[in-house]
Picture (cartoon, rainbow, N blue to C red):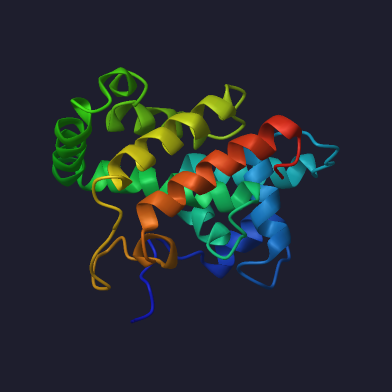
Length: 204
């Protein structure tokens, strides 16, 4: 398996913009600081307001892609880890709407007759993407649990018909998350667990 491609690269000068004199590109501290700037969960954290503002400025000027690169290696049970998965899901929906809608329609056809009552609980891909777009504007004060719940339902729904997410290492969206076995179902479970951790105050 080739090295997964990533949607963005975090440049040294952009790291310096976030942390001033930072000399590494993907530290755990950077991942958590940027994640807290995007979804300030509290949890007793005392983030530097100047660092948070640098993160938000970078998002406004460069978009979320730059910041997202710092989350790549974060554990799935962490806030930056689940934001990375949300970023991948949102980008996949944005970049490949035809493929996503085709899989969504196939899942509705396959599962609709067996479990019609569950169809109304599954959000449309465009609605999930719209929620993540709002999150990635930064300083999100909405219902993050609802974002995670909708993402879990959508990925589980798609994964029950086609558990593979990205089938080819050469695909622009190929990452360790999207190329692993049963990636769609595993990501759904990670969204679900993150939602549980959020409700218990453990997601950070």
